[in-house]
Amino acid sequence: MRIILFGAPGVGKGTQAKILSSKLNIPHISTGDILRSAIEKKTHLGIEAKKLMDKGELVPDEIMVGIIRDTLKEERSKNGFILDGFPRTVAQAKELDRLLTELNMNPKKIVAVTTDEKEIIKRLTNRKACKNCNYILPLDEIKDNSCPNCGAKDSLYQRSDDKEEVIKKRLEIFNSTTKPVLDYYNENDKVIYVEGTGKIEEISERILSKLT
Image (tube, rainbow, N blue to C red; front, side):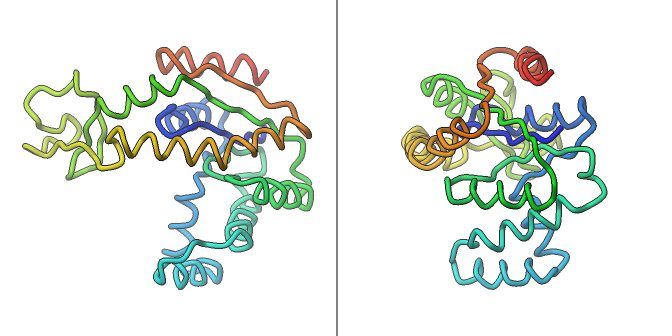
């Protein structure tokens, strides 16, 4: 099964991708992770991407598509994948469609996890992260400002991108750039919309029931 997963910041998309990866036994391909991996491995495309990033420039679509192509051609992706973080624009969606056709990797499932923006703001503003290990936990689970994951003392803080004004800006960007991608897919594929409010396990079951 080939899945392209969408969701606004804070909707729990990354968590659901990991669960689906385990249950369906297909890799979770996070574009951020594969970009970092290509840079660390010093692949040709990774080197080109790093040059641009070092200048503060965005990695162009053709390089990202090339890195995704390399990843999808790996043995681990032959039985399917969950693509997370790409495409973000209609132009990228069209490039990805061409790539999947080239690799004979159609059909695909488009899954969009949705929830109310007020709920997203509530979730993200009511959590802290560990400076030591980056573990994230909700405020109601914090006991003494120590990290339950690594045990670091007085290590918890609110990330700058979890402040309300920043979250609202991130949601504006998502709505203006990514929602048109779903409109594009709705014209060519059936987008599966899944309500992202509730317990993590409940949301996973909703997704799985709509995929089968």
